[in-house]
Image 1: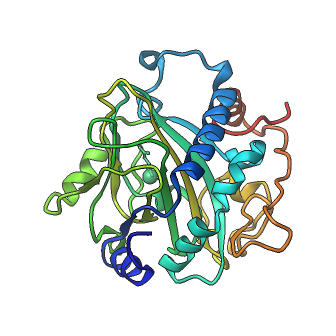
Image 2: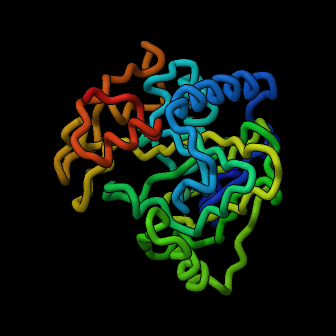
Length: 289
Ligand code: SIN
Ligand code: NI
């Protein structure tokens, strides 16, 4: 690792993001990248749509969530002690749980990822959350690197409807128009962390290569479910509003128990058309029915 941990913590707490260089070895990352490529190909095998036929949101990236559950070869990265251990250190938590993981592959010609704040999408009452964004290939301004607006993790948190209202990230960018986003080219082995409230976005992919990234969201063990909306990370374990988020869908990621990697529970019968569609498109694991 190029920087010592105190420096990384200081930067993360100051800026709401940090670039940790050369944390993982190239061979190790290449092995995980191959496993994630296979997992994404399997999940997406029933989705032959060309980029132009997808929604604006889907044109920002191919998204495959909860990959660790149906693709055991991915677990070594989701629960990597260097990754999850660093995540815990950055938010000053003794233990962290996984909220969910996801592959985010930006196709050649893929749209920008619009500015947003992640925490607005998660019913977690406390703010002790962060995402690790792991490049599986070289990522630069041409292929679609991430950009972060420094210090915005200390401000308020807005819901930006990047899912159905293309262009809505512009208002958030304008709100922080006096702070330039920092775009971060990175390489396999690096880890980018951002706080759940940090305003962030990504460049479009103007190259002919797929921009391949894997991300995992962690939160401090002890956080509670906030009121508001459904989310599979809490609904699958029937977590009540105001109760601690503890369940098989959100296992402790660090420190790992002596039993090794957590074991997932099968997904239940899909409860909505939205969930059935997400499963058919490979966004979430296969569900029954
Ligand atoms: C992206 O990978 O393009 C976006 C990731 C994020 O929103 O955290
Ligand atoms: Ni995000």
